[in-house]
Length: 198
Length: 183
Image (cartoon, rainbow over all chains, first blue to last red; front, top):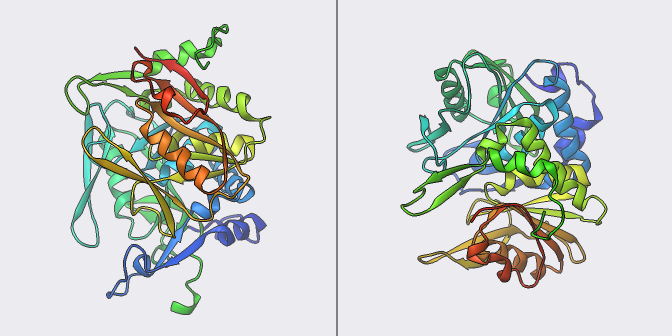
């Protein structure tokens, strides 16, 4: 669900966050198949350059999760790393990085997920999360939900409970979808700069 | 902190005990310093960030630059706490906008570090953050990127230093702040 539909309607912080996100056309490549993520890349690095807007982003997630007994914040490499740790620190939870294959040094479990062409894998250390822990999963953007679904599978394989998935940006595909693999999805803003394509 | 003969802050030992050493990763002979176990301990992680924030909050730092990917775990919380912007320094082709790059040496071959054009401005006072300093090659590339756009690198900050690799000598005269040494 989008934050504006869920208690933050008209919150000026959401507009500041949206305005700080830069749209980069044709990254990573010109897409001949109509693919929103291929045509208008949502660049959050400009949000990180705007200290106030970056702080608003973290504050909104912290306010939402601080009283939900969350013991784990899991962040998807690499842009999930830019948001997740600050949230974890503020709510007193552990931070668990979910990484591309071969990066984590210890014993790992992995889950594969689909890309536009082919597959990739997400890995987690086996000892990072314990059964019955309450988890939120963070990434910068949700498109198809494939990566987040893989992350949910990793958590559930360890007996942990995914309370919610949280993203700064949600593509229109997810509007009206409140759940991902049965888990709630919370999104702050829609993509910038899509008007002329809708 | 920092290899001076000051009394060590009591939080540092708590952080050190949380670092997991993984032998023979990524290859035989390397004792890999795994900081993910520090992130699993909310107090140790908070202490790590607090130690850096306490050091930098009154130094008018306007930019914290973090090196992909483990620099992204420590850099943003520091940036938020001291009121600075956060700039990710990334492997090639990850940043979507116009970039500048700096090459650095690996054991075999080279790699590149990229930064967005316009992220850092002339006159910015910068802190470079990574989880660990080994040979100093990546940090040196980061310093070069920042200086090329006219920023002043105030210091490099790392959780762990491998002093035997003498990375401290490769920072173009910039000071290094580290919390934990591994020999």
